[in-house]
Length: 425
Image 1 (tube, rainbow, N blue to C red):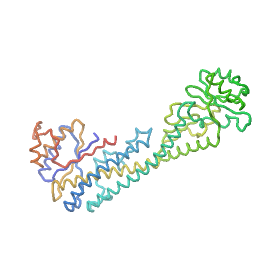
Image 2: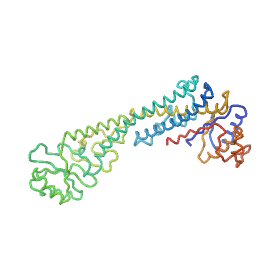
Image 3: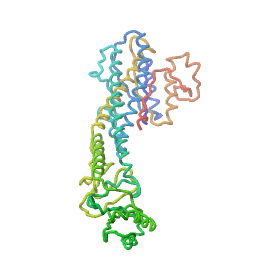
Image 4: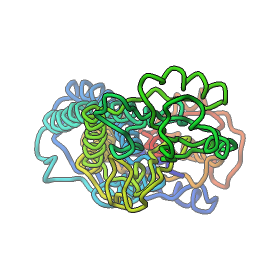
């Protein structure tokens, strides 16, 4: 399970024996794996200040958990088609999250234990606040970039009737700068290719013989050029429609097409600078973008890439600054979160068990979800002596284990905090 329980009990002889009993029972019953959780001795200050810190740490704990969850989701969004590798990038100090939690050591260099607790907590709060500020700024910029790219890509989505043709046609496909002649684009169903070749010259007067050329296809039909005199455009359109040939309204504007291609190239480049991914591939000889439902294949010279594309077969995977920033700062935020958990255990243990500071923290990892109720009963029974009054009114003996009387009640006579890593799944 990716769930941990962080508990503490007084460090006197009686409670150390109770902890040993807990370890024996949970081990024999295969309920959990237990390890000591080392927390340094901090400068306690006054009990009033600890009460205030208890409230502040509770809010900071919630904030940190929310922040790392948002950062994990940002990694998922940035990695797109590589989502299966997300957990490989969600690390803490270079190791997986479970290993970091189970081998936790307080970072004395970053959070000196000799400083007053209030300064340690303030350092953590400022660190997390700065990470959140940077996260908002970076993800907002990425979202704008992604939205602009998606809007541009939508123009390349669909069939030959609706999609942009700027990445299909080229200057050589048209008769340009002619006072009398014009090249039209006609969509012909695949079943009518032969009919088109036989009849297009006679659909109207003044059609240039042998001027048609198939320049692209999709699943439904093909895009043909045809050159004719400008004066018969309307008559040709009517006759073509009668034969189920559709003239696509398109006039070659080199400046506009160049602008659109450059915009797509720029957005793709900007996106790849944030995260190098092969999910948006520009492949030689095909006009295929991410999420396209229709593949349109330009025809003609096989050595000529589709207009607006590069000669690269595909873009390689790599790691851009946004993904790098997310990985580094996710690690920092997660590490800070576990330090906050340790601080909460320390503060609550002092408030509950009193001075001088003397308690033992233990990290429990339940082996399976179905065992958590029984594990809770074991803990409540082992440590019921920590609050006999409450225990006497709450505990309802129901399960017998040698030397233990277990309860079905959800009762916490000890300091308890949960670390749930499933929130990152």
